[in-house]
Image (cartoon, rainbow, N blue to C red):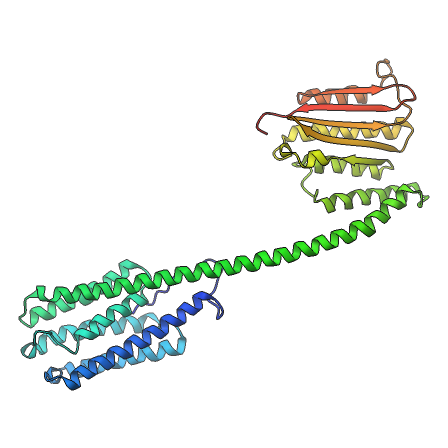
Length: 400
């Protein structure tokens, strides 16, 4: 009796295979069955009864119009496998109200204790139709009130006490509200089922993608990455620029396979990886170990100024190795323990005297001053001919 249908989740449609579509079809079937059953019941009562009150006045024509409208609703519902359009449903319900009022006026002299016996059962079954069709309880109660009010007026026009109609009004209201409640539960359950199925499909697709990504990563690591690193490590490439380029791409591929592809401005590991890649691209071979930093919870939400300072310190330290150490290899370690971020850069090059007045400004300004700027400290251990170790410690804010 209402054109409104239960809402569907955003972005979903009641396609043929969904649970919501199944409820739509079941609702259409129920509507047709209830209407046909109501017409058969009322027709039987008129044929077998002894009142013959529908022969009075315009009642036969109104009853024929009501039956025709109900058959039309059944035909359209069956063809659509869903409720008919709004105008047809409202016209059908309005016609029922008119017939109830006319029955009270024209059949008054023939009224028995059951009141118009042919109309009353149909009105009670119309309550079920209303509950099936409407989406909200206020709408169900509004249409039920219209039908109940017509029953009350019919009793008054038949010179019967109006409160005698109250049990029928209560039955009509119960039929409508219970049918509406059942439909709401069914549609809610169907939507939840469709969402669960969609989520399961998404999870299945994601799992398949992760498995394929893992298989691809294993192939890249076991064959391509190891081959690239062997080429740079074992001297198979004579051209230094080509060897540096291959080494840089090897570092990038290893970081990618580990999942370190975050924004360098926000991820400290990604920022240090970027500095290492740049150093490798300049011809330096770097062994980078940041396993403890990757797994540390403090890595998440690390202050941007700490990330920037640490990146600058590492860049300066690797630049010193490349320019002054006289070796092509450095070892970088980064970790986070007990709320302190630690970074070390080691080379086995020519070394220097860190206390000599000729020590480069890079160590004093870029490394020591950079660490102090974020509340940390830096130590440089070096000696001529014995290499250099740069150690940086930066305490992280509590709660980070």
